Length: 146
Image 1: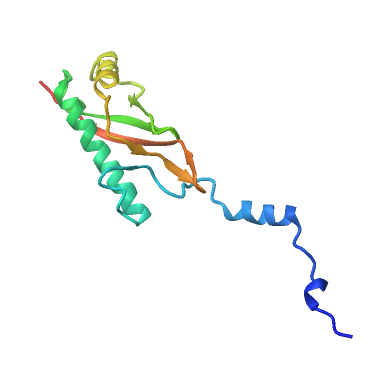
Image 2: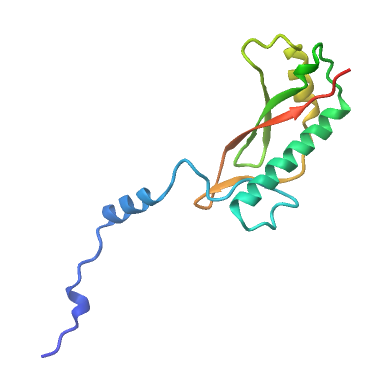
């Protein structure tokens, strides 16, 4: 009598396979970073991230140039803007000030950032295992001084 050995093997345990796959996933890093026109053709993950960051910084700078921020001190010509890209490709911009920031009017900067940073080109959100996720980046932005 002849028998097939395939019937002798045990099927892998579903829970074991799930745990193994979860251990393989790095929860602190995305599979692909957000992208914007001009960057989406890049295949290297890090090049695509750098392209996105530099393009976003240039767009933010260009939009803020139209609304000049008046600052009292020359050394306060750079602010940090936290850019949040949501899974539905919407954007949020929040200025990040030093805790003892007295070099400029933070309320005015906040108001200008909120009103100026609109109508951005279409952005593809970051993905984790094929699912769009929220990502945040902090970009330094040079502001005009009068």
